[in-house]
View 1 (cartoon, rainbow, N blue to C red):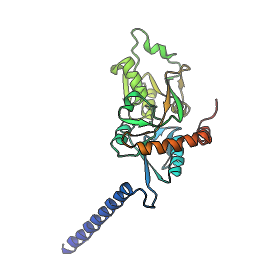
View 2: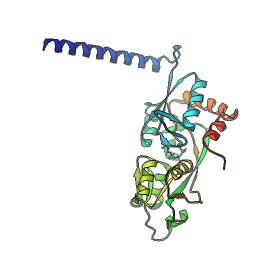
View 3: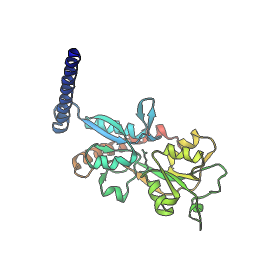
View 4: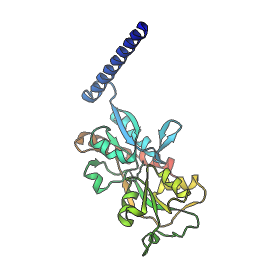
Amino acid sequence: MKKTMKTLLVVSLALMMMFSFTACSNDETTQNPENGDQEVLTMATNAYFPPYEYYDGENIVGIDAEIAAKIAEKLGMQLEIVDIEFDSIVTGVATGKYDMGMAGMTITEDRLENVNFTDSYATGYQVVIVPEGSDITSPDDLYAEGASQVVGVQLATTGDIYASEDFGADRVQQYNSGNDAVEALKAGKVDCVIIDNEPAKYYVEANEGLTILPTEFVVEDYSICVAKENTELLEKINTALNELIEDGTVQEIIDKYIAAE
Ligand code: ARG
């Protein structure tokens, strides 16, 4: 009994020390950026969005991960990628929990109210995935008089925003990831999925019996978001990004993941 108490005490003391150490080192990194040690650049993403970010084993890889690594290198910082719900990225960045958000994220008016965006580094467009042989043969069919098809989307993405605005909440099913939306499509729970073109290609390749409608929906610019107050970091990231665009690095990374059509 006594021994257990002692052990407990030792363990809790050790724990307390560990915590205070972590607290100290955290303070140091946030308050003393120029202390010689590499400062950490945290990137919030949602890693179910190939080829921009996805898991290869335990590692998050993809276009965004590689561009971010190059940016961090230029800033002399150490990149740390945090995988969270897509829906939480803008808030997490706006509140300073993460330094930047990079997630194949489209610049939108609404998001601009909460965060700043760098220049764009890639273009995407929304497409419609349907089961082969679907009655839906063009996005126009979704707008037809009396149309009632249900659209699957990833929560809070532009696909969700457009679909909810255009078709009404009753015709939209929101999922936590594009993958979940595609699973729902395969299970017949939704009639189509609206999602960005490159992930759409991945999903169609990985799942038999699905196809992408030839007409694209909306063209978008992908960019990195940073908290409004953090203009210094925004500028640094933007400068690094533009250098990487100008010297061809960004295109090289994109070409590595996206085969030319
Ligand atoms: N481009 C779309 C948007 O900004 C979808 C992005 C989803 N990204 C992700 N990593 N899950 O809303």
